Image 1: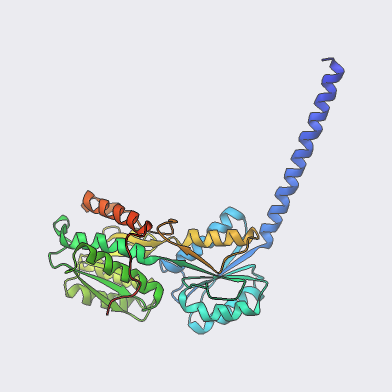
Image 2: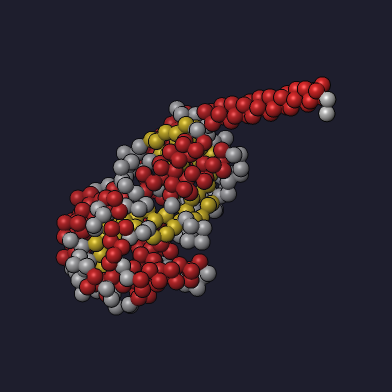
Amino acid sequence: MTMNKILTTLKTLSTLVGTSFLLSLIFAMNSEAQAKKYTAVTVVDTGGLGDGSFNDGAYAGMLLAKSKMGITVHATPSKKQNDYVPNLEGAVNDNNANFVLGVGFLMADAIKEVAANYPKTQFAIVDFDMSKSKLKNLTGITYKTEEAGYLAGIVAANMTYKYHNKSKKLNAKKVIGAVLGMKIPPVETYVAGYIAGAHSVDPTIKVLTTNLDSFTDQSKGKAATDALISKGADIIFQVAGKAGLGAINSAKQHGVLAIGVDVDQAHIAPNTILFSAEKDISSSVFQTIQMSYAGKKLPHNLEFSLANKGVKISGFHKLSKIIPADVNNQVKKATADIIHHKIKIPTTIPK
């Protein structure tokens, strides 16, 4: 190859590389501009941020979207249920939201009303099945929490029955408890699974339940848990939002064990929380925003389960040393059986 041909080739390559770089730069600038124009708003339930579980988990999904996609996110608190409609409307009118997330079953009627009035905005709600909705801009995000509850029941039953000698926090009375914030489907399914899982280990185990009718009153959560512990319960499963922090505090004070909910709550009381029954709220919220941002048509409902890793029980962390291999093996087997539809789990608490 002559020197002239070499120079011509180099010049051509330089032009191509420069053009490619310029196109990449333009694409990146357009993507960044699109992200800056996209706004997602979480309308938080009355439990508020700082509950260490449900609301915090949902907003963590928003923050993940902000981190990975560069979008703008906001959180709007709700002090009472009457705030739902104005807060959802404000997300669109005041924040120019492209995506509005309602957090919680109790917000269902409000979000259906507002979504109908703002058809160009994508709405989604955590913990309410919108399969029967005719609104094209509203998606439900639901979880088969009875599956996580069932696994939690297996662990709790084993530890209170076969392996109570593994910890001074356990006793030989074969009694466990559950604290419900409210008896609504997303809460009841957890506890129904918990009871069924416990009884799959030993049908004679007593599962005491109490309903707070509050997701916010920590003193009520503590008092109700005090009562369960006085009746012999040595493991308390709290499904009560911010009120559940009172339940955890009671378990800690009385020297028994607790089970966290929705997210891994071990950090709240590492020597008290045996594990947590989780629904992967942050990941599911992030995935929903990601689909909406990409312009994909969202279905009426997105369901998360053991099969798609949308629910689970957490690790045992500091208390792992008291969990026998037999219990871990039972959890693994039950997980596989649930995924393969070999176990039918109830979704309502038996009367």
